[in-house]
Image 1 (cartoon, helix red, strand yellow):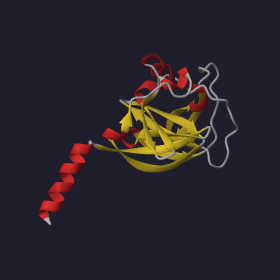
Image 2 (cartoon, helix red, strand yellow):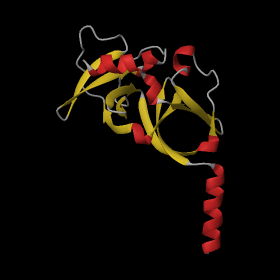
Image 3 (cartoon, helix red, strand yellow):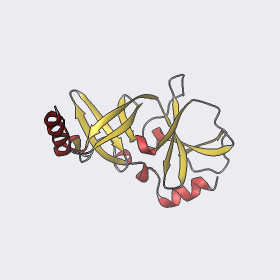
Image 4 (cartoon, one colour):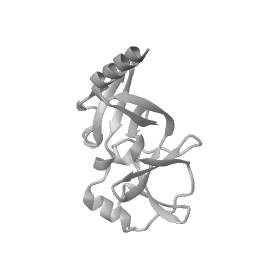
Length: 164
C-alpha cells in the first residue's frame, strides 16, 4: 500500500506541479485565473462610473468598505461589449498589493491543471488579448486560456487604477 502511494506521488511529480484555476467565460471562450490570485467572486452589482477614468475601467464598487476598481475584461481583450446579465460576475483579483475586479460573462468552476499540460500561448485570439495569456491547456475539444493577472495591467495602469 505504501509503495502504491509512493509510486502515485512520483508519477505526479513527474507530470509537474498541480495548480488550481478559476475558470470563466468571455465570448464563448473559457479562461482561467490562478486561484491564488482570486480573492472572491461577486454577483453583478451596481458599478459607479468614475469621471475621467481610463476607457478599460467600468467604475468602482464598494466591497465591505473598500473601494475596488472594476475593469472591463471584454474591452481589455479586444472583444465586443455586451450587456451584463444574471450570469455576469465580478472576479476580485489581487497581484502584489493591488486589488481590482474584472467583469466576466460567467464563472464556471475551479479546475486542477498540471504544469506539463500547459502549452505556451500561441497567437490565439487577437493581439490585444494574447499579451495577457500565460498559456493554454487543451482538454479534448475544449481549450482553456490561462490569464496572467500580472500582465492584465501594466505598472502604470495599476497605479492609475489604484488612484481612482
